[in-house]
Length: 183
Image 1: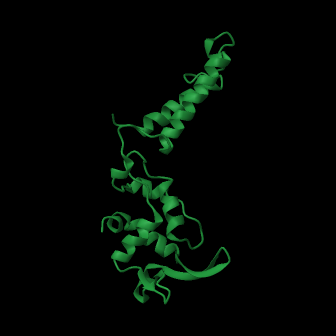
Image 2 (image 1 turned 60 degrees about the vertical axis):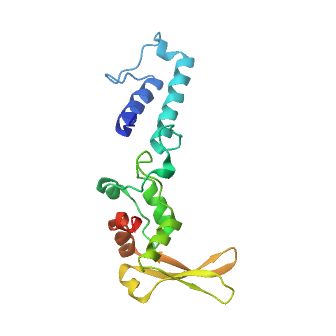
């Protein structure tokens, strides 16, 4: 069964109105004597509404979808819906913003680690090993033109260089996301 998220969103609107005592047909109050004003029915409507929202958010496991086997897919329309913060962000923050708009029934979630790995394969990011054998991600000189640089950051009291993307970098990632993830 193919899940039509738009139909589910419309069904949620209808159920929400009914659960709140409003006729979805004409917007009038539902008659006090109607079975739709029974508290048991109202609780049921709110419950089903919550299940539909979880389905839309991809929070429910669907038996017919193995999310691990799904490819990463983002449509042009979804790209226009992604909202990024006004400041420089790392790959994990970028991935979180993208994951808010992709259809979880058609695409696996984007992970910062996987995005980082793909950017390294393309040579946009690099990796170096220190004396202790610990690897760190670096920004090759030529990648600065993509809007990628490092900033000094702090995690649990330890300073490190964090790779971040400015607005140009974010736009570069978003515009080339399918290509990057298919390398």
